[in-house]
Image (cartoon, rainbow, N blue to C red; front, side, top):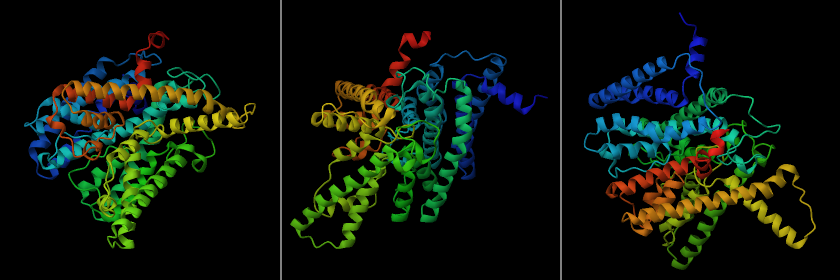
Length: 509
């Protein structure tokens, strides 16, 4: 009989995409078990048979690959990650469309791609059309997508100086670092295994803790579980219930867990960042907290003066509710989760002034921290441009001055800021291209702007909150849905990673 460690070694030698396929199909047994426990035999059979077929397929292909040493170049793991986002939703859509035969397979694929990329945009405006099992499956796929990004950040993107790590790295994006912090001695599979062993229990434990806290706050168990998985993955997926159903206690708890999306240092120190002084000196976390305090304060002041002019007689309690509504919503959209506070309407109606969705779109564009589940441009790139701007102003006053920021700081002010600026330009070009492509397929220009930002920043709830009214994604043409699907993959992997996959020199190396 084969020893367990020998079996484990054989499994790790399988292609990375095949391993992700096997894990994804095996996870279908979770919604199958839930559906069986709730007497939903139709969805239970759909997920059980799809999962069983997937596991059998995985075992057959795995046996065919047994004994073969993996042959992957420097970009092999990155290609596997790209393939996972493009092709795994096809597999995940099979039980979805079987459990909901009234929809088309392409719509199911879009729904699963939106979940796996942690975008969370949904085609189904009426949540009652989906059964509780399908709501759980959507949230679970989004949760797995979040874990995938947690692991891929340190095991795949960081060694290639992609995903935001290019800002502080010495090597060029897409190439391995050769300095003292190089991770080249470790094989890609070993890095992935170590990251999964370290981060998997942490990710699962935090999700379980948040679920328990939300249940105690008064949410229904299924709603609380979906909200917990959505907050950790920043997917913004719900089971049809209101994320604020637990009141202000539930919102405070969720806001605390959303802070994990502001900086990798909030849950791990396995990657190099712009500072080694811990969370207290981490630039991403400090900038994130600054935005969380600044934006609600500006909104509060604007509404406060508006309330005085209107003389509507609101109490201090109403002002506090309005302020908290803006704080929670800012935290949510900055982390690209997209939940809206119960008191968000108080924030707008307290003064009689409507808060434009442009603010929420701007927060989603900034996004969270590098190597987290959040999307957007990332706070570290914003910090690099800020440091470069401060340095340029110093040189205007003192042209011969020398920066005292140290080696890492000077790298961030010069080369890091240059790479960050390149990324901003690529992001702007992608945003313009997606918006233009959507207008070509008869999407109104204002809706195309919102959809492009929602897809590229992986903040699906912007489709409901970013414009004048909710955008009906189901009414879009297949061409528009395909454009959005490509934009979601581009927003999740980022433009530099896609360019790295298209570089012939890197493939030859």
